[in-house]
Length: 112
Ligand code: 5GP
Ligand code: ZN
Image 1: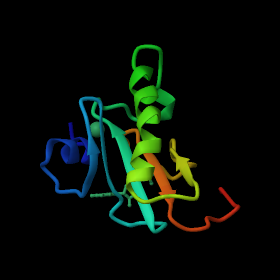
Image 2: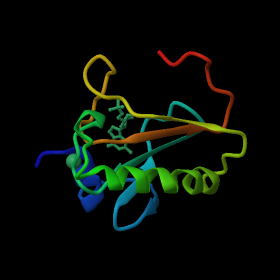
Image 3: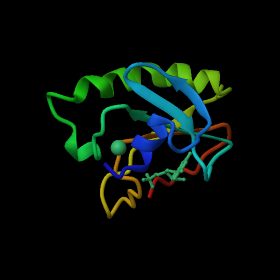
Image 4: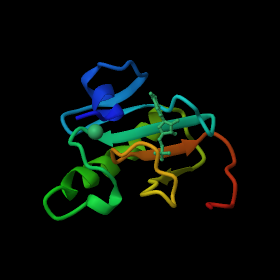
């Protein structure tokens, strides 16, 4: 499958890993939008939030169980934002489910 994030998980494309386990991979965004900008992705290829269902949602729960630890280890102390862009109107550019963790500074009140 020609998926950028599957290639990052496989190590075929280099990334700055911040966390990995059997279910997920977390790495620094190549074009950070905040002092801390991490992407957390399931190892299973799921295209987007729209494709989450009963049979694959367990990994999403596991990702959210780890996000507080990932944020803390990244040095975030005063809050953070978790975003998942889904589809064209949301400007999803990589079609492999990912959760952005943004923090390390006061973020905009605007979300769109
Ligand atoms: P989206 O726009 O789909 O919500 O987010 C995709 C994110 O992936 C963007 O923030 C973009 O900077 C990041 N990204 C794209 N290509 C690469 C890459 O090769 N390596 C890393 N680390 N991040 C990438
Ligand atoms: Zn993929």
